[in-house]
Image (cartoon, rainbow over all chains, first blue to last red):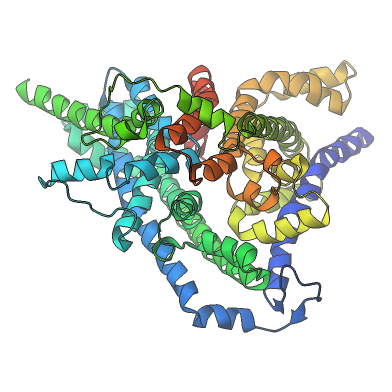
Length: 297
Length: 279
């Protein structure tokens, strides 16, 4: 019998071998490589072997204006997207769940931009942000002005807002669905008990739903933050389409440009390591918090 | 009663306003794709201009240089996304099966390592990954686009969570009937986990169809481009008018819309999986 168990154990291990090999080559090794490379001097096209330069790349980054600008651009983008994304997806999920009719239909409508690829989304909005485009027409209508060009793709702050709008538009439905699923997993009996005790709809939401979907809320918060810190496509297409780079030079775009346009893979590696550290520490923080916030019902 | 009617109407009001915000750009894409620049830049925007400029589509497919690269790029995207999905479904379920149903030394460590890689942002490892792919002589090939993305930690984790609740009796019965361990995977596990497999396939297909940054690094020759690369190239060319740009966008979106409308549940449950309580 023990022989059978051992044979089974061996098979279990064999089944995981492809994964171990894959993650070792394509995840673990690149990280170690990036860390190693970040302490060396290396040009993408030069054949010279990498030369050890200690912290020079990091010193360079922390004293360079463009890296601080990238961090700033990324954090403005993340902060500007985070709040509306979490608040509105939560609010709309609550509204959808409280509807008796058309729940599925509304979910499909809100999710539909997430089906489009990000390049398509960015190219649609590129035209809408045109000086003669719909964005200006809408703002003119809203602010009751006539024919004003709000310079969506030229003004620094408007450009940042523009990228935030594109991202928000594309992913808000996705997070709404996550909240809907979280709310659906709260047992109906809890809500019924609250109603019998005389709770209003608002009280039910604040004191029953919200505390019980805390794990979902945390998950959405972390996913939004991490995804925002990784943003790339919209910014890339807008810059290709003629928008100024500086206000939307987010970290991922900066890594790409440093490595491919400037051929400085050493600096790009140092930036990758810093991005990794930021995101890993945020994930760690999330795990810590979610452990202490487990709910059971 | 009146109060309830009012709150209900307010809820519908916000939901509909928001739905309009969501759908406007999509409607813009479809309507602008059959208009000339003159109509598109008209103020106010003529939603129904009565113009049907199908040349826009012809221009998008033909390309400004007349080389008909777009069909080729669509084919590339299709191959890359399909192959990645097939590979992901197969490999992630195999690993998930091994981790869920077998006890062996180091299982917890393997699982923890895979979970840890879930937190690694692709953007942080893309440069070393690019150098690895160059060293493997896979730049500018399908393999270079597919292989580094053929497995993902989320897929493994998802399959493991799904298979942990798989009835052991079924597996044991097959074993008694003389099935090999791999035979169990092939004949018992795979056919009985289609919902999870389909969800994973849809998620993978979508993310590869959408992928910009990795093809941007790997692809050099125009015939090897994927759809996002073609759209960026086409959109920034001098002779591309707005209508043709939107026509290219419509063409890129139609396969995803078809997939979305036929497999809605798998798309939505893909998002829902994230909300499922982790153990």
